[in-house]
Image (cartoon, rainbow, N blue to C red; front, side):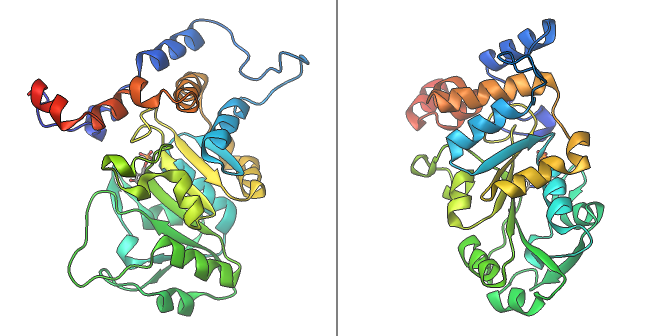
Length: 285
Ligand SMILES: *Cc1c(COP(=O)(O)O)cnc(C)c1O
């Protein structure tokens, strides 16, 4: 019996799918579909179009895409924007998420050179400024998903980092990890989990997981401020290697449609569980 109150745990398979999402998977699995077909014209279509369009509509981002998981999204963003060049990251954000997702290893796999700035507990704007040079491709911000640093600490927030990026003509990529498409800050969840809000704060690219707070299938979602960045990511040969299959797409499309229709809190198990009122929990206990 899981009586711990843990809603999302990687060892337990993360987000349980909503019945509607599971039914969409079953429909996609059992027969043929219009996965890569434009029904109106009979021409070959793009399997990602529906999901990208819903992501744009929900988030207000200029463009969006989805790949296998958040690690893949970060890999693709770094390889597309930074290959062969330098990426600046705070030493306080060189994290290991678990399951061998280590930020320095992902940078290496993406073919970018890691430039570490600051210290474990304190990083200042001047640290980024001093590290920026002709080889710099982008500034990376990584969410500390599974630990906190407290005490004598200093961090450059996203807004400030974006200002530095803008001054130097450098994009800011954020690995948000657990992100939502609903602003749940009034409901006790951190405002920083709201992925579209990260674009508003100044990030140019935001990557987050589909099967964490979003409550959908395993996937990595990317929102971009510049449509050309998303297009460059789609054109990267890695995108083909990291693309979603039709079953995941069916579940993701259903999950996004539910958000668009304003029914996410009622329909998506993770959100329903996390947003349960203390009164309801007390009755259940
Ligand atoms: C969970 C997490 C990841 C990895 O996400 P996956 O979808 O499991 O690949 C990457 N970065 C951060 C900050 C995370 O929290």
